[in-house]
Amino acid sequence: MKEKWNPQGDIPDKTGYSHFPGNTNTLVFKIPEYVKNLEKSKGVIPEFVNPKYANADRSVFKAATRLECMMQDYPKLLTDAGSEVGFTTYEPWFVFSPAKNNVKDALDCFSKGLPSFGAAQAEFDFYTW
Image 1 (cartoon, rainbow, N blue to C red):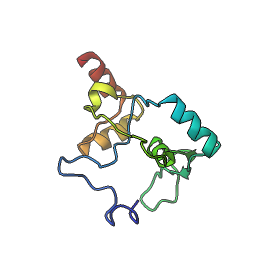
Image 2: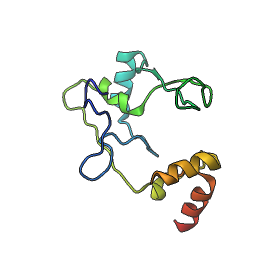
Image 3: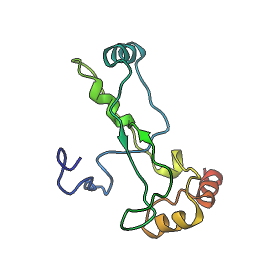
Image 4: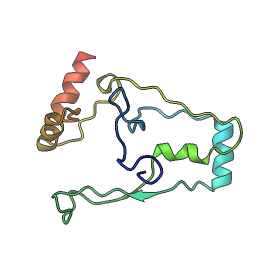
């Protein structure tokens, strides 16, 4: 990303948010275009390894590392004229409040001003909603 986008990486825009929203609750595809792209790409989307480290010197994995692909990479397959891509952004508590972080990691996120994605936050958001 740094080579193609910005030497500083994924920096916030003037609103304070990423230019590349990474969480989504729903992907919507036009089936004819989707099938056409599956046939053209034979179902292959670029993959990458996204390790999560447990320490600062990156010598210990926090969890098993797996091969991933990003939903943001699908539009790169849309090379035909007239292909359209868009997104809608909502506040995370409104549409995305998973209980995926343990208490320590949730506290670390919270202390950085990020959504904690901990169980307490997910339950709070659920009952707020």
